[in-house]
Length: 287
Image (tube, rainbow, N blue to C red; front, top):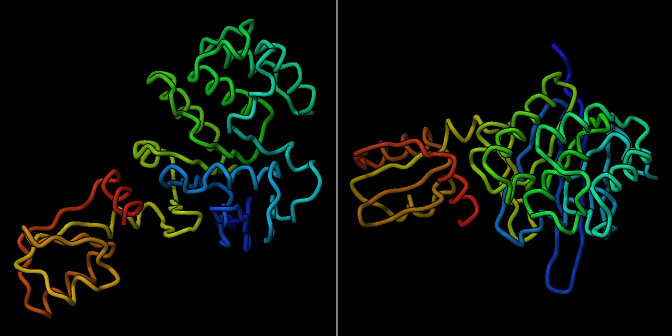
């Protein structure tokens, strides 16, 4: 069995602003894994990506990429970043931007670029500033993939993109992961993307990592229970993330544990329901 190795490792990362602080926190993205990064607007997702790409300088902590401490810019040859960073080139056509980007990457694949331009129906003679938000997202996505990266850092890549192109993007990401050698850190607000793409989930809230789960754990452990009555013990239990009195019900992140406690306390369980991913994300972000 192949041993997992870390493609991205963050240790004690921290960045402070006047009214906001990101971190300190730690997390790892293993080889062959897609990690979904979720959180409300303003939770710090985009700031995190800028720190990872060294666009913004951290106040504390270390970032290791491909097993080595991040230094210089050589590591960026193997990283694809989609984070709406092309605004400085608004006055250029997409073809002109491509010429700049392809010159920088020694592994640029022109054939792949041409195929993806056709696949996403992009007019390369159009100036970037004239493109719709969705088209800009698609162009950003194409540039991210066309230099044979091993790690993708994607900041809500499908936001504002048409449904057909969203499907194509998910297909391309699944194909990107096919060989088991690559990894993705994907910020998303879409439960469907998490269901179809992600192996692990990190929940970011007010600059802090509040939760970190394997996706299979969520399907297995999260549930809603309708019960005869809600006691103070249940309200305060660490595995109860939400409860209501009318009708009596609780949301838990560990069904087996809570079911055993309810039986011991002689609280009747009237119905049990597994949560959909959309519901899980709502409770993780809100509560």
